[in-house]
Amino acid sequence: MPVLRSSVVILLNLLLMGSVANGQDATIRKLQVESLRPVKKYVPDSLIKKWKSGGNYTLTVGQGSLSNWAAGGDQFSFTLNTILQLYSYYRKGRNSWDNTLDIFFGYINTTSLGSRKNDDRFDLISKYGYSLNKKINLATLFNVRSQFIPGYTYPNNVKTFASTFMSPGYIIFSQGLDFRPNKQFSVFFSPITARWVIITNETLSNRGEYGVKPGSKSIGQFGAFGTFTVEKNFNKKVLYKARIDLFSNYQRKPDNIDIFVTNVLTTKIGKNLALSWNVDLIYDDDVRLFGPKKTSPGLQAKSIIGFGLQVKF
Image (cartoon, rainbow, N blue to C red):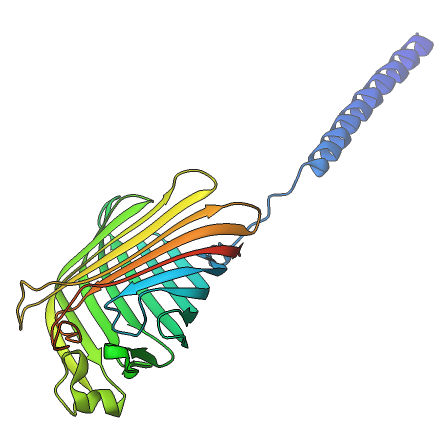
């Protein structure tokens, strides 16, 4: 009997030890499997990317035509153009902040007068929005538009100084609603808009150009403002971008609405080659440089067709 009890005790101990060993092996295997799983790295909210930035650069050679262009130009010309378009967008919760900067510079060889000159423009838009719902934002818009270098007109084949940096310069500060039914189209409208026309050049100021009083450097205007923007990709190679700005001056002839229109149609031909067509239209009742006596407003038109390099970044 003692031998039998000893055998039973030894057997039970062996079974217990085997069970414990199997449990330990299972635990070790579980730990090994868990150690091979990818670790989810915690990223604090402050490091989540809220900005989206980029741009587009275009260098083209082509043909341009102008009509009643106040900043200077002739009927027909060969051109070398560079366009730099930059953007930076911010999104967080209901808040958005959209910033765009377009810089255009053109070298023009005119055929009518055998002259060479430059044509340029810069256009900065900054718009802050607070989302009221999925399609409508309460928005504040700031816009400044002018040029860098002198421009000339040629009345009666006489070279006449017409514009330069911030002469004229247009500054808009506006509070309104921004309607965005989709990513391709937006409408901003404001019945409360302040606009300033700036003339920093003394010669143009003394002549009283662009609606300012002779000798004055600026004129303030109050009115309604609307801007419509479209960015449509027809396919991977064809892109159309357009913007229409409308301003009505409550203080002087509100029915005579100032208009600024810019259109760009781009077709990619290769990886970095593109064919582009730019059309700009301007009507400003205060720009009275046209007509038989050069004292009337007029529709300004510029069309440039070009082919060249296009790089996105």
